[in-house]
Image (cartoon, rainbow, N blue to C red; front, side):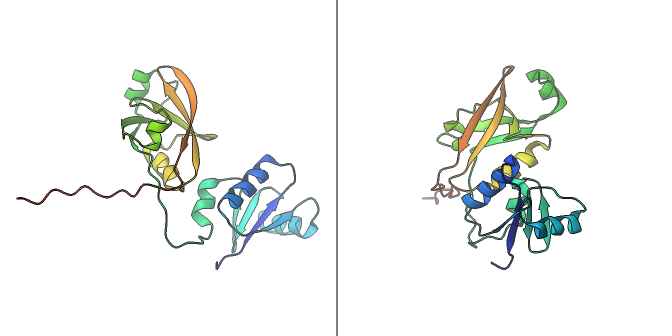
Length: 194
């Protein structure tokens, strides 16, 4: 790995713990600096940020402030050059004002689920066509279909994604599990003419 990873944390801080778990799950090698017991760690943060805040992940010279899995996935070095992709297994579209009104959503946000592929992670989680996905983990889906697709693209085989679902006025949470052995999607080819 070309970039070294240093994590500035405070013991007992939930966001610090979540960031350490994230790094451990992905097998990232890092150096942990405790801002309570390491005065030089505090000095580094104060010098670079003008304040002491945790967690902060330093990748090379870049500082990622707060527990943000999207930014971590984007900037952390990758051990393997081969990307493994997962598939959600359902089409989604950005919720418009008309869809929000028809679904009786309190605001215009989220993505509406279209066709759900049989045998997909979405189907296994119980997601149905017409459901509206309003949240991913603790985050509200305000960025529409692009935000949702980006969140899925950052998952790896073996990951789980917690979603908040709006179905006929009821809110529920479902966990979508991406199998450790991701199915290889082979494009369908037309049969050659006889």
